[in-house]
Image 1 (cartoon, rainbow, N blue to C red):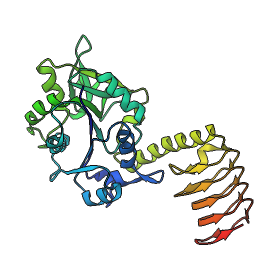
Image 2 (tube, rainbow, N blue to C red):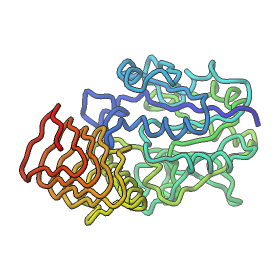
Image 3 (cartoon, helix red, strand yellow):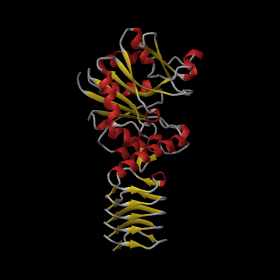
Image 4 (spheres, one colour):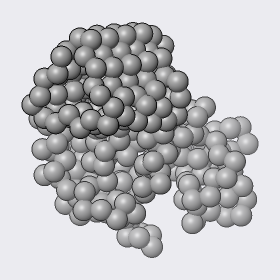
Length: 335
């Protein structure tokens, strides 16, 4: 089988975000969205390459030196982006190719994708949508074998009725990828090299291509605008809140509680509605937080009560009580 490698594509400009900030650096529950997919794939392999382009310096500075970065000089499509990583890959093994704007893909799904791949040339992570308009369709033959991926704008009327879509996550046989990727053509309206075209190159030469269909399509679809960012935030907040509740934290209305990723909260603490907990915050056991509380970078001991207040960059000792409608500023220690 050889080594496992991964390439994360993070070179796109993200024009639909209408922002100076590179799309993959937009915050999601307190972290850049790119950090989530890097953490997920980094738990599977240490051989991770990040293809950067727009905002490359910002991305490298924020993501740090753990990853190898490769620059895509011009935005010539996903196929061209992956070509930039080819010289750094071994001659054989398995390669995960992922998009930097898919923060909801987790380690378990990526492991399932690898296990499904087996000895195929490629495995495509797919999802089924009742309304697949705008997404590339996975076209299969009568026996269920994958033939190609066709983009929505290029699909025929029959192909547009196909509900199985390409999420943009793949597992490739590296040796075959190195053989066929340079054969991609930019002979299309956009003048770009589409990674999806490699599927038809494989199948025309009778190489096997499989699909791995995920149950919840939302976790596999990339974030392209701020509405989709908000939807992803909602899903991730639900994961965070329910994980904390399973660890013994009470939330009277979890849908109205905003907690950043990685925040620690002790058991028997009660979080009331309209509470926002951000940054490097730690909350002890048996605390009463909210309603109407905003905490940022606060270390809170056990049995602390905070209601209707803003607290920032502060230590609250055990059994402290913050009076309602307080603004506790940086550097103060309350006990």
